[in-house]
Image (cartoon, one colour):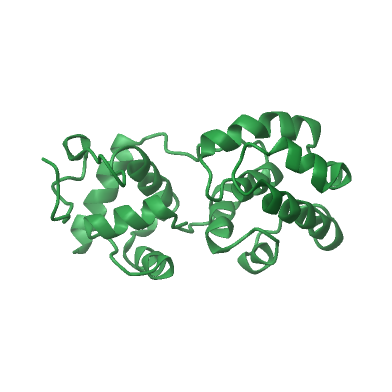
Amino acid sequence: MDSKTVNRIYEKLSRSLPDARSELDYRNKFELLIAVILSAQATDKSVNAVTGDLFAKFPTPEALLKAGESRLKNHIKSIGLAPTKAKNIIRTCGILLETHKGEVPGTRESLEELPGVGRKTASVILNEGFGQPTIAVDTHVFRVSCRTGLAPAKTVHEVEKKLLEITPKKWQQNAHRYLILHGRYVCKAKRFDCSQCVIEKECQYSEKSI
């Protein structure tokens, strides 16, 4: 896909999603970190349903660590993989206090050392929390990138690498937001709606439903 087409895709997506932002509810970097850990293999809606009360009761790493794994697991039991996520979050709070003075670190290396934080999670935190032009590749971004021909590849890491290479600097800060929301609501895995797609003309998918 040539650079003019790539730029046109982002231009059209930016116009259709002028207020693109994370759909997770959070007020600071710590809440963002916990919300993103909870969102693995879960919907943002299901995460938001529990974090309001969770953050009100345990707003800091100290408070959450003191609450303990069992109480945390009970608070997040409606979210998938709750036992594992509770364990990882409590361990993460301990590391934040012991190693980072209770603050969320702003480097990929330090973030990925936290339990429950992989490359995608780190990318989201660096972008949303620290304003870095990272591109987090989840299932939606992967699908849209491959289906449209924007950045086709066989693995998430390869898609991320291609997107960072082809995405103009002016779009890198919001690129993953545009692609996530477009994949979540228009270019869905099933029942995708090409009639509502603003980049249908640029899309190279061979099975468009026009």
